[in-house]
Length: 521
Image (cartoon, rainbow, N blue to C red; front, side, top):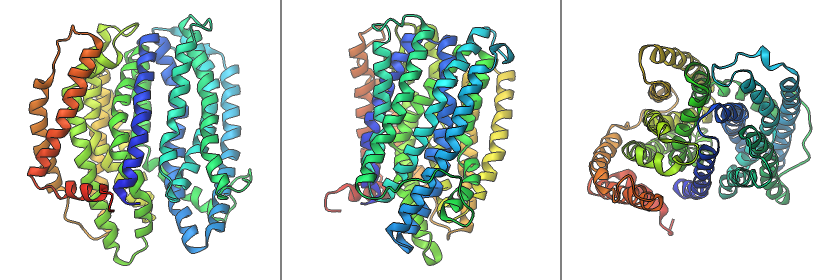
């Protein structure tokens, strides 16, 4: 399976998941609004989600895929199965007691002991502890799901792992739709009910990836013990340690943004940061993440070649593809931001006063989309060649710098949550530039990305000049009209114009994409 065909498969199912995710976020915003209950729920959801992104889909998966691929190539399928079983058992042995301890501590710690925000006060802390006791358990099944998904990707199975998040979105949507008919009418009750449903959905996600591996004979009975020194599983966890730092910049920065928004701006301001992240993740998953996930096994395979010239060519092609797909997505979302936010979220408890802070925060955050994609791509290239230390050191410094910039922007400007988002985008820019520069020590220098940037900038500029004139209906039109005429039509026309502009520029990355999507390949 070619890089772009795999990326296309991932993008298709991820698109379905993201559409459901946006509908879910619309229900959340209109049900709970931008008050302290919504902010508290989102903050509690951030903690297991951080575990998922760092350990599951992030560092652990990045450490496992090269080791799993190498074990199959050098020692055979039996060794790879043993490695997978040992890693899964170790994850369970680590996370199960941790989840239990966090749940118990959340139930017994008095809410009065925690610093409470001005709005919400002690009741907000009681809700935060209760939700944390329920939601943190989700970290165990979702991390195991990510481990098994990484193994499936190595085996050439990309569709099902990309489709698994659809299940969680469906559970979340159903919980919000049936909460009031079941008698949960108070906002705190709705939040608690949704948390229980999400925890159950996490275990169903795990079942969906476990069954196919079991049927293929790739899944042995896991040994529930910590990694043993000298084993391949121990090497995976040893490699994972620096990777946690290396892949942590965006995740930890997002957590810091939400904490600062919760305590320094207002508890409800977490909603603006969360929705901005959701709008960022939609194009990110369809563009940069799809390319990075699809190319990672290939980079891991080519890292062993002498000279690594082919690895450099693959990396340069993936970087050009990342720029090609992320830059127009970023700029287009900024231009259409007001219409997108109004169509997706306004209504119910999400009122007019919540629109502009969400639009501004989203614009500042999605401005960093191309750099987030490039940084994640280069981080995976470092892991493929066995260098986990460089991304870790850079991320550690940039997390500190991002936190300092957050404080400066909050104290010196009136940007509020938009200042937090701007700091994250600037940190992503620095991360991508430094990683690209330092990777030269591991592979021969390539042709660079200046030409790819120039072509995409010209095509994006042409697209953005036309987008404002493609809106068909005034702001007071109905929701369906605005969704179709002010969002869908401009996006479709913008994509077509962007592709035509690249075709006129004779972009080699567009030709490469077209060749790899033809059925003959």
